[in-house]
Length: 452
Image (cartoon, rainbow, N blue to C red):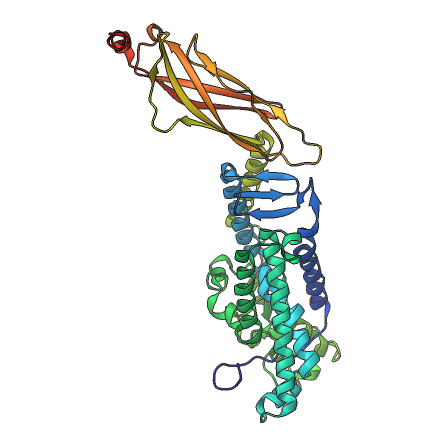
């Protein structure tokens, strides 16, 4: 980090303005608002979006999701994955250029700080290639200090979704949370100060498999060689490339888009704005465009293909399935299991007794939520007696309730009898399956031996 030459190829992108860069800045602003403001929004007395790992709960805009909602998590992950496939097959690397945190923080924090303290591209290159001076050292120290502050703020914002924004920013979170903030701060500082575009080039898996998702009909950023080549002295008049290399010096990945498709390209469209700023002054169109390979080769482009339709159908199916699960979801949990170490007991009055433990949780948290009482009902075992305490759950409350099921010994003729426990509440009901254990046909004999 102290020497920029010899250890890596340092990239000095030139700042450029243009329609695509303005669009990216609006996207960056929206993403920053989501990142920094969402944890401070309260819905139903809880943070609008929070992952409570200790309690294994997700608070999402007034609803509470737990481990029993794993199916929803699976649908969400599949929806995000197929969304990535769908949009990449149509529009290329939109995620990398407009929404990836690596891109957003580099362009919104790191590059502006660097330009402010060290000047534009030519000035930074001249200073970095020269000897160390007091002024250069002071600029570097100030830049790295601001990078450290930016890394800390980003890490705190990220951890706010797990530790709670109010607790974290007021110093009331635990040591584990602040330790994680420190680890993330170091990681982000290292990325801001040194690693940068190398993450996209060497570590990001998306760059590796994006070429599999693209085809000649995918909209990508491309140089038009038919209009741009050959480069020559009369290029200004004919509209060919004048070899100004502005599309190269603005690239944050340090590539030359004129060499064709490259994995390092993040789709930021800086080269389009750069070429456009030059060619429009010459009275021509930009030679770097959003287009498909078929368009550049003069072939017809088919936007709807088999795999695109398949991706769209899968996205629609996942959206419908998620909606159906949410519509039928009961916001309270219930599970039943046999009490540890117990099978069955013969009581003095001749009844067979089984003891169960009912785990229940009220997953409502809105401001108007009230405590409700549960009704328990046995199914599958006629004339059974259910002994249970009165169960009343407050919002976000969970409880472990002991249950006793008793049946007359002569009414049970099997050692294992299927049993269902229906748990009713104002929010809905759940039917829990379990089994009733007994001595079967030998139950009366056991009872007689016990009396003697």
